[in-house]
Image (cartoon, rainbow, N blue to C red; front, side):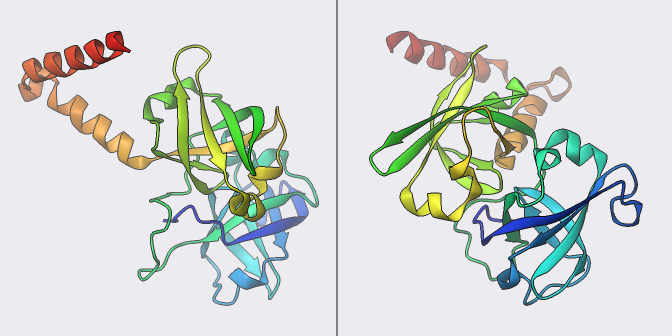
Length: 233
């Protein structure tokens, strides 16, 4: 479990394709350096989020650590596009006494999103992103949380439908702390939606199944209220 507060920006110093000893075969082994601050209490088998992807430490020293990235992870995240000297967001798994400054992040990437535009607004940057899997848009809500490359960010705008996208704003401080701020139009970011939305959806769906005998009158009233509010706007 993570908070979405990036602790350190690391640098990829080695990629070893087909390193069966650490990735299980068919994947890639990454060595990430320039991160001594987060390795002071490291142990083999620890979880570290790399660009929001929960990975297991297979080897480490004072300034570097190594993780194996399985083929499935390479397909579902942007880790497959990393090269030597690429920078990545890093966060250790939370402790029981960690302040929850972000939100509950699992490190399980749902999809990737393409950066459609980067627009300056004062000293902030507004990123517009379109997901590869449009199905995740139903979990993205204005003023809700979304995790981009492991960073917990607040959604400022959502547009559904075929052109579906959302926007986030990076303040000047955040721009200095995460790699996403330096990405350009056309590049991809890892996306993890707020897990709370998934649980709510499953609970509501279960309630309204025929087997549960749910009260469909409640659903009709809710839908009518939403439609009326949309028509007014």
